Length: 139
Image (tube, rainbow, N blue to C red; front, side, top):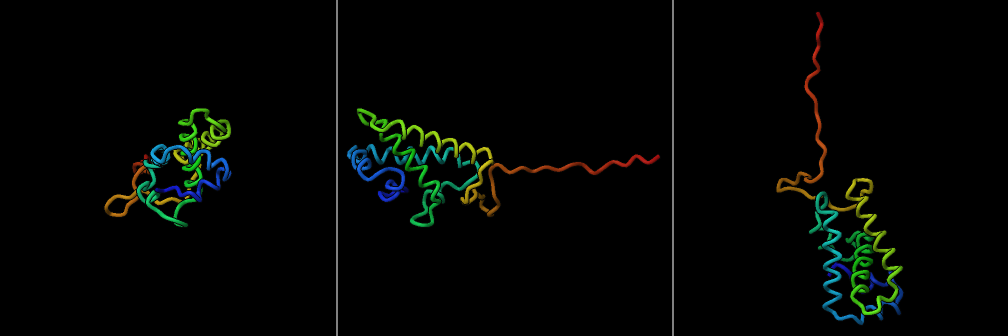
């Protein structure tokens, strides 16, 4: 998976992680997949999400890892009976979504690989403009 056990320790305390981790492995795997897909939905128009999520270790973008862990924890806690600690998880989830919206709008530019076509030309939200040759009406 894209998120490791050590990645969770950055965004949640060790004791809280043990409590959340007691959810079934299936719920955790689903939450991680949902988090990656949610992030990919924001990044896909401009960035190569396959390359982003196939990166391993230090090659991964630390901010994407942190927000993926936040979103996955939010989904895992939502699946728990008492939704313990849901306030802080909701705040961190909303912060992650706000960051992703900023990336999608082009206000935030993360260090991620751009989506390219077969020729290696960047695809996605490219702005191409031009104009006609200037007219000169000298009488």
